[in-house]
Length: 130
Image (cartoon, rainbow, N blue to C red):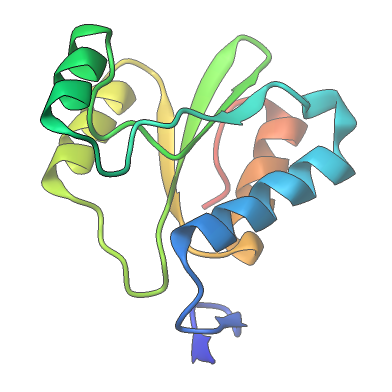
């Protein structure tokens, strides 16, 4: 176990997909009014050169946050990382473009970090929790 922040701990070997699944399942089961408004765009993974070209031609772009949430006419992005994971330059660049266009993106490393940010959106419809 390792400390994240504010006395939150999680196993060091928890994968991004495990963390993301916890977040999605919690939101789906706890806030049914948000179902189909929080979702994942599968733009990652290893692809053959041909698949990569097809996906790129059809609009897949690198750096899109792992979870997107649409609420009250606003879009929010959640970039899921492990405890030791880092945001790539491609992700950072895309997130900056989105932020400049009014789309907030937050990096989250655990369900405990995701929950207050998600709830801030539900409660205010405007900002992520600091």
